[in-house]
Image (cartoon, rainbow, N blue to C red; front, side):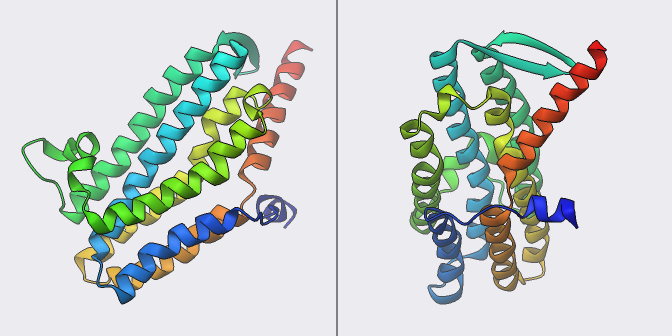
Length: 232
């Protein structure tokens, strides 16, 4: 129970309402405006790429501001250039996102052209229509205001360890990955309208209540402690 309370210990912030609204726009569109459930889940898959791009920008800003930062690995700590974090994230998260979007697009049957199963990942902009642009716009505004602008104005790029910045998206995206892929299966049986409501509720809960930064900070402390024990 203590671990459970630690995970769900985040205090609701005023700008969390932006994320709530951004996630409710697709629900409203599907239920009351006749938007396609397939397009909504396509947008949720693209949200992964939005978060990834913003994280790359954060890492680049931190790299410019600090030059180097600590890299923890298997009980060892070393100082590496900020560009290492940028390149590592692009490669690692890129593979992560490619797998997610490929599975989703294949199961949902939305692949176009002759690009094979990876076509969606490399040509996602080709899938965007007006309704999807509204949904994507909501997510972009929410993430910019809540995360990116706060990161800049509070000068967090000077203090947040780049390892934490690099791994910030993974907790949120893991929840999204599981539910989007599961949701694509529901689309096959025509139950997308129901599942989008359930999915949005689960996603909002994890977005605004889970203390991801606290979990990452605890992980960083454990890495440092492991290093200390190894030195002994």
